Length: 223
Picture 1 (cartoon, rainbow, N blue to C red):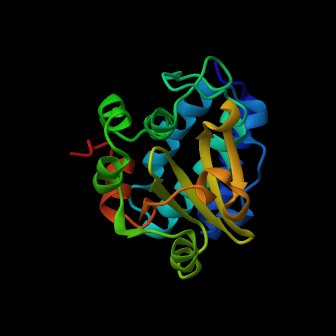
Picture 2: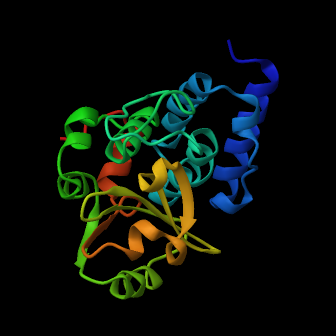
């Protein structure tokens, strides 16, 4: 059962987030006081408060959840090609399942297993908008430079996938890294070996998909 202190803390986060309409004003302490299962319950309860809010508020909330909370829970979870864990820092997680498991944990009604096992292009086409493909990292960087801050993207590589997040401090690759089985990390785009050694990039915006955001807060399936 969630403690009164945890409930109060999460309520303060939500009031700050929605009152200001800006993720940057939200405290970064939720994950320190709420275990993962309680965190998921809190997200499920609290996203329903956004049903009548502007899409901007939904977008900012999702950005905060992925960039901050999911990162803090999942960072360091080991990679394995067959990894499917649904509990952070326990077991192992493959790159596709990292994306679909975390989105499912946040309450998206998606085909978690099917999308994880399919080519990443299928997942991007199902969940994202503004999809672009590039054959060089420089072109990817040029594309990201034009995108708004507080954005989350899904990117597909030759044999890999993950999130890209754009914050006020830059763009980061947030993924379960297969290199040296490092596991879940968030690294600067320019410092990512997985990106620098890749030849093909497909990327689409998760947070710009207004229809997806509405289905999320209304608990509707993503068909």
